[in-house]
Image 1 (spheres, helix red, strand yellow):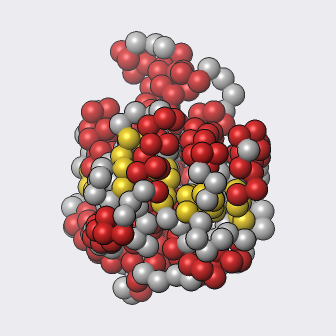
Image 2 (tube, one colour):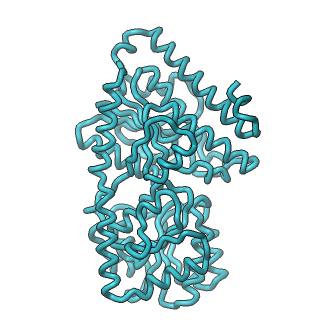
Length: 426
């Protein structure tokens, strides 16, 4: 099967979505399928086989993201003779629009993964925040209904999409992990490298350090906890615009000398960093799965997290961590104290529960589920060869796809300015 994956973000960016694309692509390739990934150009990118980079403006709106340039024909030339059997879009706009056009051109199914709660990311855009939230919700919902199938990383995301009016077929397909990669780690070696005492209690976090991850709240909670308990250190892996804010909070609260921000962990160091932790903390409201939670669980590290879509499917309160129903600093600190004061038998029981949880998120299982859905879609009235033989039929489908995109954008724009839905449709 020829699989075309289209995404606005990919390596060298480091985050859950980028990791998801890489994990699925590699899993598909190991099963004998050819996968081509289309992504905008990024600074410091490395050449990679079957990764097509399209021209883009780097560091859009002061972020690390690249904005693709509208250059008709460039992608068709870059793809050459690669003709997809299926197109899998990772975003509902920009490259996602192009994904719909290509699927229509070749008369193949379009799959869309709803990775992100886009309304939690509008702070990157200028304008009225509530209006922008309405816009991105309407845009992503409409795009999902243009797809032949939608992948939801968790049950709570599927329920949310259905409540928003997504009528397309929705399948729960979480991004999996290779559990064996996380079973072992050099706990003490990593601690020594970071300057963390062997007997310290380590609170840890991994991920892109950005505002939508709710890191200001998280930093205040952990700093407050560390101020009370002098044996506690904090290890945060990742990079992003919120790094200086985190440092400022720890400096103000006092325990700046026990904060460790070494940047991005890769390879074996990633598993070792998790193993160096005693508890993993998470407060993001913008996730649909939270891949780092699965990785922490695979390393037998309990999680303290704020309830959110994708999080509640992983954290079982009191069993493998603590799931806090409300965002409250005192409650979060209390949950960290719970983790700190666990006795040996409790800790062993919770570690076993963590490993059991991680077992539900196998990459092999997730990849095979995705491929089964692809295969089922390809048998439902699509005929790539027929469209390739008819130039005018292909052009007509392309125009129809463009019209669908325009209608979806118009409807979303109506939500942006507060038009009644009936007017937005007209």
